[in-house]
Figure (tube, rainbow, N blue to C red):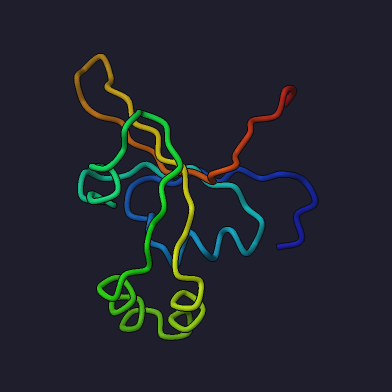
Length: 112
């Protein structure tokens, strides 16, 4: 993209696939993605706190979906084996859960 400054891209639900996250990271973009209740359920169940590094394993089931939908990304995704992300979860005053996935090492700048 040729952007010379840090970029944080914010996405609504539906963008948390491993292959999409991988493409954002390859471009050097930081991301913040709102997760739906079904996204990365197994990893979220294993979390011990509301803010953790989580490893998304490139399991055979996930790789099969990638192979079908994005065959060009399949080999690299399989070779990589896992993706490290950060998942943050919070309960809103409405008692709804807000869960976000983001770049693991994301640090917000002191001055914007």
